[in-house]
Image 1 (cartoon, helix red, strand yellow):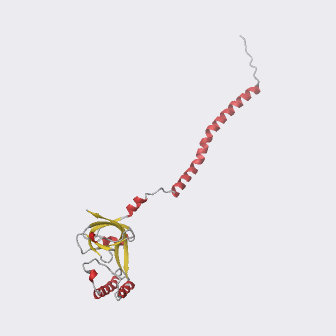
Image 2 (cartoon, rainbow, N blue to C red):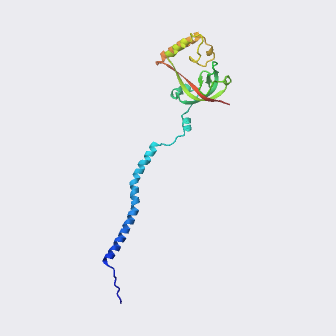
Length: 220
């Protein structure tokens, strides 16, 4: 039987072995490198993500936010709700009981009884209230306002009554029938009663609430 002789030198075998071994190591390194990079970058990506979320909490729908912030009031519970709604947007519905004849800047809403009257004044978007609104049911959108009556206010009102031409915007408007026909004597009596009310309240003022109307619609 013929024997074949391998004419391969040991150095050549070693070279082949080293080449194959290096090729495998390179392949392993190439496969491992992305995994190592991913593991190192992942915590950094998490930190960046949290930073983006913290700085940009997301866009808000201004219209929805304003709508949700508006408080719906009723005539009968107005006084109980007013304290928590000062300078905030509100909506109220009621029937026009009285409209002040001095300029048409003020009307009063009632709901079932005229003993509870809510004052509504014209805002920047409304020139005046039309006399034809008396008896109509309205939905008013506006801002709740607080007017504080203190000793200074009453002194100024009292001084106004002595002038030949009275400023009808000064003083307390109640919306009661005939209140616009009061003479000086009746108004001075009203001022005296308010001073007594302040004294008995334990505070230095009385709060009167009204709604400054931005818009309104007649309800059928």
